[in-house]
Image 1 (cartoon, rainbow, N blue to C red):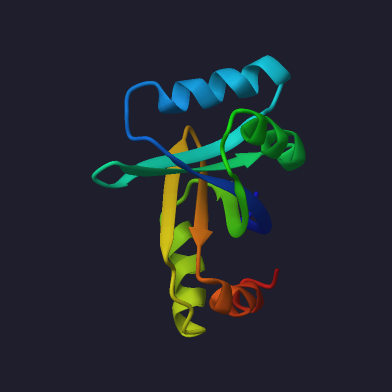
Image 2 (spheres, rainbow, N blue to C red; image 1 turned 90 degrees about the vertical axis):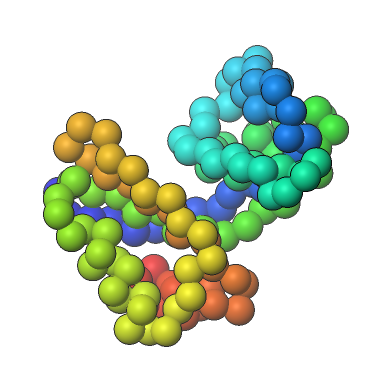
Length: 135
């Protein structure tokens, strides 16, 4: 299988950087049947953390987060997946570099013989990213 790229939307929330913050969210998702494809969470600084969720049903996930007291924001991102082979992600990043697109954040990982990655960029760079990756 070749590498595929697609536009996705993530739900982004501010949360408290303390034990159990993500567990609370995931338990809420579990209770209503939200399938999370991928997520990222990290501390931003003292007393501040953020999480991003790529869910199969973004509206259901957004409603769940809102009912839990969060203020989810929907943002654009790019999802990449394909066979785990040397240079696959480098090819994607090279296209973006040639198009002068700055990647604000990215995560990439492989499991077995597959890899996936997500790219985040500033809204002003979104159209250029989509053009560079033929989205």
